[in-house]
Every structure is written in C-alpha cells, then in structure tokens.
Image (cartoon, rainbow, N blue to C red; front, side):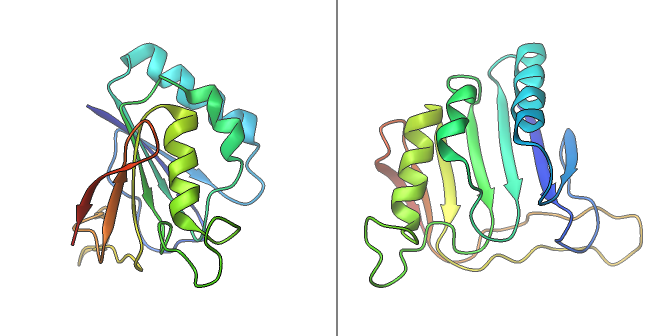
Length: 152
C-alpha cells in the first residue's frame, strides 16, 4: 500500500516516512491538496493511505467528498483529534462527530486518537520522523461513521 503524508511544517523535526511526503502550512490551497491526492490515487489505484500530520483539527470536511472512494484509509496524526471536549457533545470540539463525518463523507476508514501523540525523531541527522506507536485510546471509524475498532 502506498502512503501519502501531508505534514504541517509548523511541526518541527525531520521529514516523516512515506511514499509521498508533502509539506503544507496554513496557506496551502485546499484545491491543490485534493488534486494531488486524486492524482496519486489514479496512478496507484485505491490502495493508498492518507496520513495527515498537523496541530489540531483539519478543517474543510465537506470538501473531502472529492476524495470519496479514492482512498483505502485515512490516519490523522494530530493530538486529540478523536477527543470529545466536555460540554461539546455533537457540537464544535466533538472529535467523535468530526471523525464520524470524515469517514462517511470520504467513504473510507478513519483512524485517530483521543490523546496527545509523540513521534520518534531518530538520533542522527538525516533520519526520518517515525510515527511509531499510537498513544492513548485510538478509534477507527467505519464507512458509516460508526466506531469499528478501539485500541488502548
């Protein structure tokens, strides 16, 4: 399986492992993101995993319908993406609803953690950033938005 990694350059450390590693930041045009993902999936088929590394929630979930059916899975390597902030059930800050919506809109599985994530950065210059093990409770959402797997 091929992996496309979008890395927010505001995250420090070395380049992460992946077949296609692309740097993005707050002003990366959303159409560029979708165009690139679709180009890779056309070339390599639907056997592509999208990994998004960034601070906080990726926005623009309704626009992700452009990726519907093109990906094998999405992994969100961001802190507390699946966390439900107290008092926000079903509203802004509800990570469960966020991941549920992403899975339904893209029609692929979405994996995210409710905890902060740490990455192994290697010990020598030139090594790549490794996603390593997930921290905390990790939820995988199915195509209908329901939780299909829980890892501790």
